[in-house]
Every structure is written in C-alpha cells, then in structure tokens.
Amino acid sequence: MASLVCFPFKEEDVTVAVRNVELAASHPSVSAVLGVGFSKGETWHAIETAAPGIEKRTGKRVILRLQRRIGLNLRGGKGDGMNTALQFFVEHREFERLHFYDADITSFSGEWISKAEKQADLNFDIVRHYFPRSSTDAMITWLVTKIGFALLWPNSVLPHIEQPLGGELLLTRKAAEVLVADHRVRTQSDWGIDTLYTFVTAQAGLRLAEVYIPEGKMHALYGGLRDLRTMLIECFSAIQSLKSESLNDERNAVIHRVEFARPVPEAVRSKVGYDVEKTLKLLKEPLSPRAKDLLHQYFDPALAKGLIMATEWPTWSFCDEEAWVGAYIRFLDHFEKGDADWEELLFRVWVARVLNHTIRNVMRGYDVALGALRELVAETQQRSAGQLRVEASNPMTLASGHTALEARQDVDATWAGMQSETEVVNVPIV
View (spheres, rainbow, N blue to C red):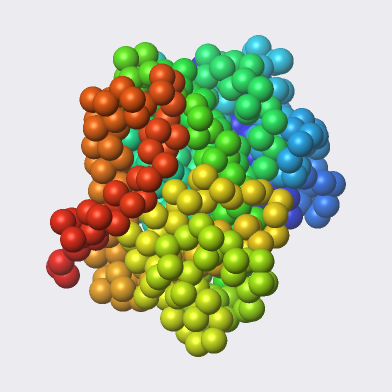
C-alpha cells in the first residue's frame, strides 16, 4: 500500500521534527512525507534544509505545504493544518492511506506506522493510536470529550473510544473522502477538529481500530493549565456544536476493535502532566461581576459559592464528579463561545475539577486515579442511557430526532437526586 505520512507543525524542537520526518520516510509502507506548516519559521526551514538528504537516503519524497485557511468562521489552527493535508491526500490519488502524527513526539518510531498499517490491512477505515497516559494528563479528553460523548450519545461507540482527541491516526481513502465532503469538518479550523473527525466518522458508521503504543506519547508538557485554556474552550465548543446531532443506533453499530493494553511504564506512571503549584493560583484570580451573576443564575448554588470562595483562598473540594457533570450540562445549554465571562467560567470550573481529581485521586496512586476517570465516564454513560430509556417510554418527553440533552432540561436535577443512591467515583486504594 502507498501511504502518505503527514506531520502538521508550528515551532517544534527541530531535531525531533527532522528525525520524525526521516523515520517516517524510511518506512517501507510510506511513499512520501508531508509537512504542513503553520508558518515558514525555524521548523519549516530545518525540514526544508534536511529534505534533500532524507530523500536521497530513503528514496521517498518530502513535501512541504503551508496550511491553508479553510475554516473561515473560527480561529485558524490545528483544524486548518489537518484539513490542508486531507485535501492534499484526496487530490493525490497515488496515495491510498493517510497517517497523521504530531511532529514533537520524542518516542515516535516506525512501529507506530506498522501497527496502523496492519489494522488497515484488515479493512478498518480508521486506525487510532492510544497510549498509557499520566494520571494528570489528558484532562480535556477525559473531562470534556469523553463526558460529552457519554452524556449526549451514551448508546453509541463514542464513549468507548480510548483516544478520541488523538492527533495520531490513519485514514483510508474512504474515510478521508467522508471527512473532506463534510461541511462541519471543513469549517472546524481550530482545536475542535479531532472531535469532528471522531464524530463524523462514527456517524458514517466507519470501521474503527485502536492500536496500543506501550512506550507512550512522550512530548513537551504544558506548564500550568492556563496553557490549555484555548484548547479547552475550542474542544468544548465543538461538542456543543454537535449536541443536536443524532446517531442512529442501527446504522451506527460501528465495528470497534481495541488492542489490549500493556503494563504502564514507570516513566508514565510517575509523570505529572501539569504544574500543580502554578495552577493553584488560577482560582484566586478575581471574577467579573457579570461572571458571578452567571454563576448564580445558571449553576448549582454550592458550585457558585465554592468558585467565588476560591478567589479568596485555595479551595477545590466543591468541584467533585457530581458537580462537574451537573455544570457540564449547564454549559452545554448556555455557554457562549467568544463571551469572555462564559469562557472564563468554563475554564475556572474545569481547573477546579482537575485540581479536585489531582488531590483526591492522583495522590492515592496511579491505578486509583485512572480508575476514577474511567468510572466517571462509565457512570455518566449509564445514567444518560437510563434517562433515554425513561424518555423513550414516555413519548411526550422526547421529540423525534432530539438528543438526550435536548429532551431533558432537568437532567441535572435528576443527577443530584441520585447522589444519595450511587457515588459516581468510589475506587478503593489498591
């Protein structure tokens, strides 16, 4: 099979980026490597300089393209980069498969390509890579994307996908053509692109495999959670933009194969995914009067009180699992992207949830922390599916084609009432 490997990039460690380009070009299944640059900066020029030598040693083309501005209504970012590569691939029919990998991965090897190719040989349309993750890593994946999928489409494949936001995946030509033809994908120019790729391919019923990379995705860490603010907002907004979409259970009985995981390396188990001390200061920043009004108007009083109190002294206990899911539902209904106060509230509540998880779960050990995250998603999915069954038995409460969220404006009250019956996360120390 003739495969094209794409590395979207901004400014990376040039040694790592050039190394990864050559590793990909050296793989026997790869016919060419495509670098899609945000700009012609240092990383672009390093790859451009190294390209002739790589081509001579491997016999493969190294192609550089600037990312095009495709989605004009949102911030230009990762989505434009990936969609530029997607369009290039669709137009060049000599390639049969398209791989995406982040350019800054220090643990990247040819085995990543081989594992994806083997699953594509078994007629899977999409192959995603998943990894052992730090117990404080992937907090947007766990708390935003997975929770959103579990709330809105609990009976679909979506909550079961290990790596729904991963930038490491293989697309067959069939999958690429589904994506490039979808206007929702083309307009998603920012961090929300991974959510759209995942949702649209599931909605189309494409076959999905996930391969496990035991060494983990080793790359540059963020500092405080403030560094993830834009990504958080854009990933949540992508979920919110899809909340009226439905997945037909019969049509979307997606075949989903997941390679079994291996023991987690100690380097991953002991890694902290963000700077805790730096992050603690974020909750102390003052809230605007309007933000406080929004808290009191739309959110549970205990959450509102806790978030306001946190501006005076460090506290995060108010944002447990139940509080986060209840707030998430309110954000789905009322959040306005581009509104400074709404964006700050989403960020601030998420920070409190991450800190609560870190102090309550991570400090008790890696297995406890990961178990707590998985249990939260599973419980959310179970309750949302149960709510759907109740609504389906009472046609007056469920309009045809509506999602679970739209049909239950008071679901957060239902959640609160269940608190005494079922603890969302209660993982014993092991």
